[in-house]
Length: 113
Image (cartoon, rainbow, N blue to C red):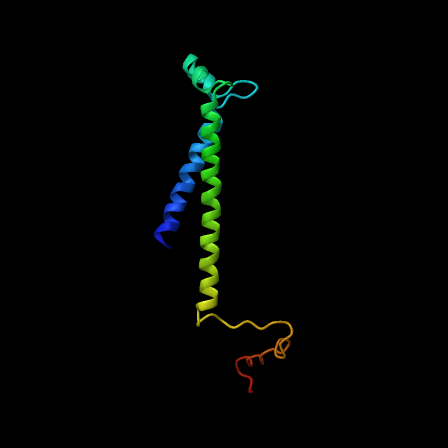
């Protein structure tokens, strides 16, 4: 695993945790976690606050961006392992002539071939 992939995973987890906290801080119809913080919570995270909404949007963008980056990095790593690995077992497709043939079974102990 490359260093870039590890950094994306770390950023992904941090963005997920921050996104959970920020969403819980926002005020919904019946109040939110911001109400638990008293007057300061209402002033900072009230319905008219533009800053928390912008921060939530940026955090969600980072979360989505790192998720896509992790997906494409892992996808290319898997494809490279499949295409480059000379030790990978050969697969037989359904249209190959030997696809329906089965290897002869080994005789049971005590039986002759």
